[in-house]
Image 1 (cartoon, one colour):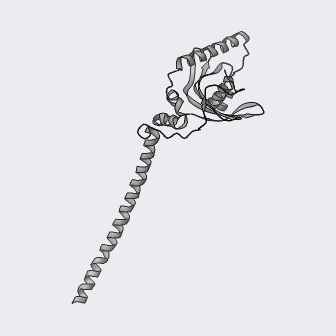
Image 2 (cartoon, rainbow, N blue to C red):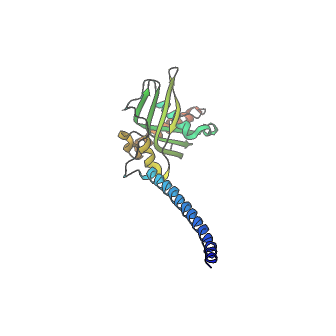
Image 3 (spheres, one colour):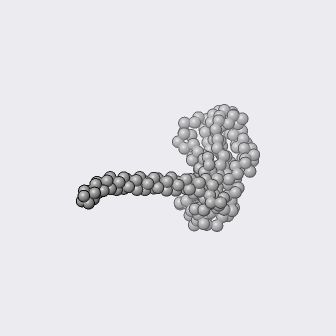
Length: 219
């Protein structure tokens, strides 16, 4: 009788063990899923809001100065921004298109004698037919890496903030702290930059009207 009971209990306990094992595996998978999703949420929140409003700076630690290194000009910066903004597309524009860029120098980090990082608040616009017709444009903080080769400064890389919720965080993580607040606000210098671009476009189209043969140029 006892042997029969043992066999019955064993037959009953075996399925229960399998159920417990499956339940443990299921709970482990659910826990792992919550951990992964939680980590992604924390990472997303950090990228968009920081930690208590503070962001971990991941940029260059070189001292920030407010003057361009010798030989690097505002014209070179404008050319670099226009190339980044319009790229090969600008080769399809005709003489009735004017690309104008103006910027406010936020700061410069001289990494070494031949490498610098330039931070600007930039307004880059395309005008069509007249300086009053603005076709497209962008206003934002930009970082441009320049390398000096054979005495000439050339752009080697560029950076711009992420769109949307990550805009402020991406600036705080990339732009040096002493200029990051100014870099976030695109409206501080917008009026003077708009006026500069308008004047550049006006000059371009006046020359175009005078000669009738001015080619598209970066201003």
